[in-house]
Length: 443
Image 1 (cartoon, one colour):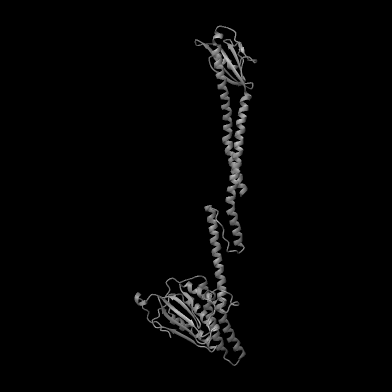
Image 2 (cartoon, rainbow, N blue to C red; image 1 turned 90 degrees about the horizontal axis):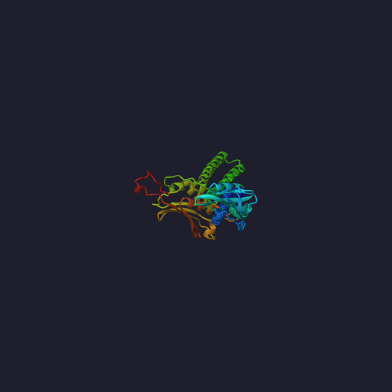
């Protein structure tokens, strides 16, 4: 591309110089010949004035022959040489001068001009002035050499400018090629610099946008894989334990164990669908207000069963007057699942889930009677592998889901630990005139 741009610029420059320079060179030659003719005529006119009386009186003409490089010859009315230098005899221009006209031409490598000599309006002779053509050609050659040097300088300048412009045009395209290659190799962090050319910058911006979207998509897919594995690990372990216990105790009703396992499988399927919905960033516009009391009642059996296996209790409390939340049921369900699972794994004693009213929001407190959390909040909610940290990625997932619903998840007390989920409150149904038939009071 660089070679083509430079070659195109140089060819365009050479063509322009040729189209302009060749006629100019021809014009310079014609101008030089005309200037030489004018000089010869001036000399011939001066001599004609001097010798007019001698020709009329038929007196000999002496001391006329050469003025510098100009040869001068004087003829009478019959074309007979009276004086001066004209070894080749009268030129055709002399006949024109004897006819009363100024004659000029180029003969045998000479520039010739002849003027008539008059007396009382009668032509009585002619004066011929001639100079070598090579003198004019020498001067023209010098002018042509200067023009050629200027043309060469213009071509070199064009080459330099074309090289710079080619580099300016090619470098953004080369960066685009490198960025596209890196993007094809899976490096979605690639960003292409701007070259100051709007069209190329538009392509670079589109490539950056594509890389950003692919990076975001890949990050969401990876996050979904990690979140799904974290959220499904405990239910799967419960199903496995139930089935293994049924196999080890053949006297137990297998139908009951299989039925409970199928219920857990249905819950796993619902969890997967919810995680897929959250991972895709899908949100229902104009969703109905979320009744947290009903949601807690729905999940109480599952959470209470898990804690009962550890000999622990689950206490659910919904304050009277607590408003409904404006949030996705799937997101709130997953956040509460993370918090209760975290309390079951790392806490002690009774796990309490309390819904209360906060300033223009709904607060859900999840607490237990354990020794508490020692990490700072920004460390506690950072995404890290579960192997490297006891809280794993669950709390990071829960905070991300809460923020996606315009809420907040904070550690409000470290010992005993209390995690608080703040959600925006739904509009008051009485104020809007949309009063539901019945609202659960919770327990």
